[in-house]
Image (cartoon, rainbow, N blue to C red; front, side, top):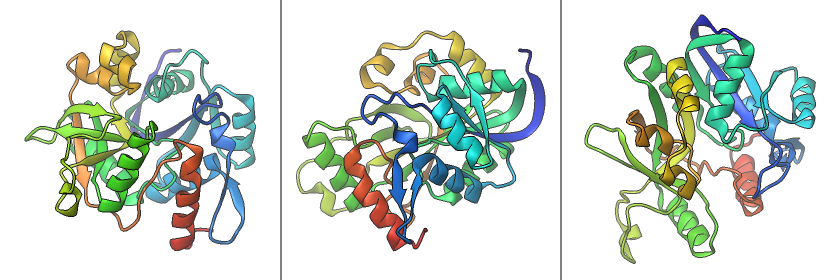
Length: 271
């Protein structure tokens, strides 16, 4: 479908059912402060609306069960191919299915329900005020508790999050599921140079078209990190780095993440 230029931005939440680590994750019930459970996709949609409720929102999926859940919430699902290798490809496919080429598209991760609204708003503002930026994303300076969580997952052979290393101008040098940079034992007692990548992206429509046409990079396939394709092919990624928001914005990557996420919802009084 030919894509018509659409002024302004959109938010797209990619959501697939067949997650290797957590099958059916978008429909996983998550209990809030009231004791009531809502599916992950409902909580992710609410978090995205809280950040930029003025932007159109679409959920990109390949599963009718997720699409039905999204419609029941009064939102718009967009059916995308099962062949999409990752969320970035799914966002690109959603724009194609919708027939739109917005000024920018925000990829709000479907498992990142604790993403601070201010981070999303800042990312949108960055794209609105930096027209030459092709791709941007967000990182957070690691708090000691987040660092401990990442190291514990790494020691247990789990991927609890992604870290990013940036250059002097704030552009990404590398992303990894390992905790980078390496810190000697005891270093976590001082200021931490570790930046947790939150998986929140904004792209120009042209950058998404290029991405789908480019082959995956060796590092992307090894790490399982879609954003490394941009870097491999010379497309820079601006990284907006923030201080911790006052809570740990843990993503639902593994079933073991459920308890700390529910504890955070309770502590923040989110029903």
